[in-house]
Image 1 (cartoon, helix red, strand yellow):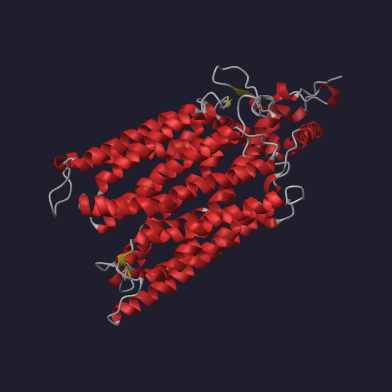
Image 2 (cartoon, rainbow, N blue to C red; image 1 turned 30 degrees about the vertical axis):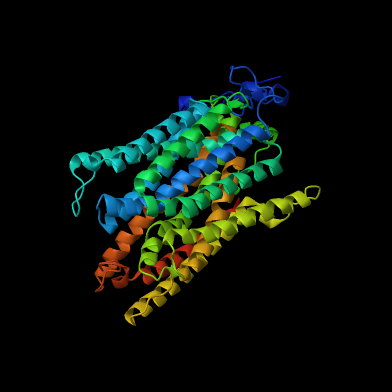
Length: 562
């Protein structure tokens, strides 16, 4: 039997949060009546309910991994070669070229949040991938045409004209928009093909997904960089156009095998609604909240228990107050609390990506000033990245073999199998890498002052530490954000991994500008010289080391409370 209970103080509560509380637990609404946000319904390409025997499974998930390998080759190639293209072909300055690449990649990864929102709310991940893939292909075609057409390139020792710059930026940011879309949807689309209750399978999928991402980076540094240096950027761009076309065709060819998650409407709107009601309830006088909240306490706890809700960061009974509004469902509160619980982990990974940005900019410039001779061969600086990539690939294979050997044993207590532990280990390695990088840059500057040139292989130490740290952190982030995300927000939450990369790139540019401005007030700008031989990159690396240590301590605090 249900009763309509109204508190005498209820007249003081805004009308939108007045409710009639259900006290008879036998009449609690069913889960389907509460919300369809957590619906597990998938459809096939005909729009009918997906048959698990025909749709989804390992084959379509494997297609996502293969496509990621091709896309990673393109993105990595752009990251390591565009600096030289802007510098030598378009005649921008060193600082402008570095900032253009940083801003390009930062924008691309940041846009993954926008595309993630679209695919979670309105369009399927398949549709968003195809649209953004076509945009990326169009941008590559524009850059290829410009690289082949002397009329769209500036004369020697001149910067691009307005038309040449506009053509370049349209092509460049069409690629960026496309990259954001494919990064937001592809990992989540592959994960959707698998049984989410099989945690071991989901974990293995993201391990092999990241393995394919590393393979793409390996092919980029070992194959594409030498091709660019021998045959020029025009050939490089044509190869990337072919690879992008192949990736699109491969992905689309699997459409009969896929199962598609039905978009559930805007999750951000639901989160804002919960937060708004929570603020309204919290703003009411304490006596009113206590009296009314107590009436709903048993019902709220019962419902949250049925939803198997896990309390994130000790926030018990806080956002639950939003349930006092009859328009707010338990699923909405769960969705909000889960998403908010992921944000501290996301924020503490940004600094790591700030350090990764140094490989794309300063480490390349360091290598250009070092001895790159190995017998009769000249080693491209970018090719040093092959070493940490190979180590990462070997690590992933060994990790998966370990899980395979122990598949009949309980590995839940093994720390390394937990993504939060791997993320933390990666952050620790990044801190160490910045310490090592500072020492090596000091050695390089000392050698320069003595008229000597340090060999480029000294950079291997920081590349290995930073590369392995990035592998552990990014791989762990992809698995963690997908596995912990509300089902209605998996594209957005997976995009947090790439958004972290984006903010790290922008933070890198900000720290360079700030450190340069502040150091200038004390006599000498750290980056005031004409090149790194007349700069203090070693002090900048030391600063990054200190910031990363503090960031790591903050991460440990949040990870333990998760």
